[in-house]
Amino acid sequence: MSKDNIIQFVGFTTQLEPEEFVAQWERYAKAFTSVPCDHSILQQETGTKARYKYVSRHEFRKQDFRFKFMQGRTSENFAEKKVRVVQTGGYTPLQITCTDHEEHIDAKVIAFISHDDFDISYYKQLSYRFLNIYQAYYENCTHGHILEFFVPLANAEEFVSELKKRTAIEVAAYKECLAAHA
Image (cartoon, rainbow, N blue to C red; front, side):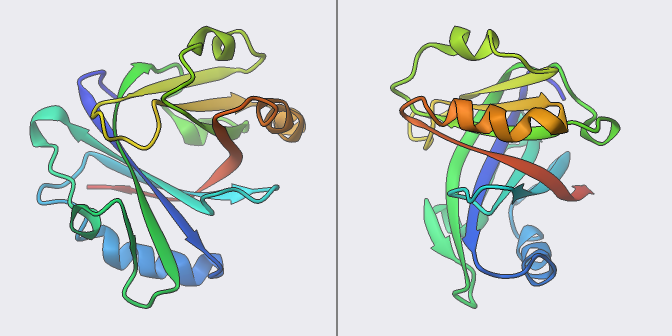
């Protein structure tokens, strides 16, 4: 992943079972962009209930970025109306310490940080193995920062609980359920 790339995050809320959701997501993922993205990952929440049951991450070279999922609306449904889609926006990588997600047996904890929380140094002082930090590329992004923490599986639930004590944050553990290269 290059720091010159833009990462588009999309959140999904649904009650669909993973097999049914992934099948629908794959159909719609083909229409996400006018140019192919470098890499896409679909992640499913684990453990505690999260705002987004699934989060997809799409990586683009900045000069190729033309994300058009759901015609640019910030919230939409799949045609079947069983999936709500939330555009969180495009983000630039500020710090990437884990690039090969499949090599690690850690839990991934994704924290969606409000625009009002400017204290990123707080998050850097926590106990984790790896931390990826993304900053909003556009002013209208849903969150100011998105952080991916990689923590030992045994500590994931406690780590999520600790982060939930902060205000202006949405956080949950996720596991990768589908990775696709353009």
